[in-house]
Length: 210
Image (cartoon, rainbow, N blue to C red; front, side):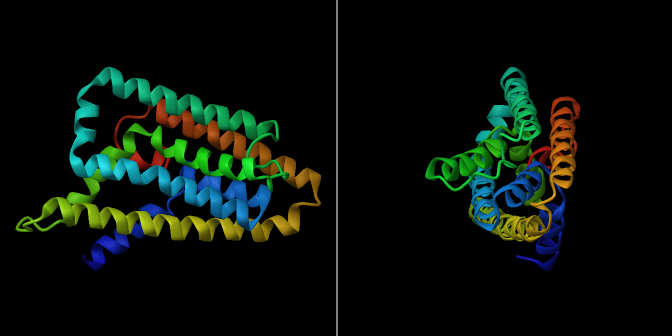
């Protein structure tokens, strides 16, 4: 493991995407607990993508253009659904988020955000091999370990984003106009992320959802 990998991974994790937006929205809507659950869900959604990339199964997925496009359409529609939910105050900015069912929903939404991202596996295939030594005997093991470090960094940074949003929540929750503005901005951003996932090329694959 090199300092270059840690620095590059940190920059990638800090860049805003759908996972960051979702965690921020959860923190604003439900406080620290909701933010942590959202961050956990997003991280759990990354882990299967890493496992598939480690086993080389992502490459099989992307050789089928039809399957890849179907997954991309599903991811795009899911982001649009998130925008609709936020705009109606029925989603992550809904302030009534303490029921056990709601907790599971917060985790599940984060999982689906990354499971439905067909570009995330490509990101791992393009990013991680740069930091695996060419003379490494167990390249697959090294690949997976670097990926797990990336996943742990994602969870840590996302929780930090969420707790920051929860702190801001205490200052705006009693201001309906401010909350309405925040809700509108989040909904618009989800729409923009959906359009990006639906129409962008494969360049910069992870940022459309991660």
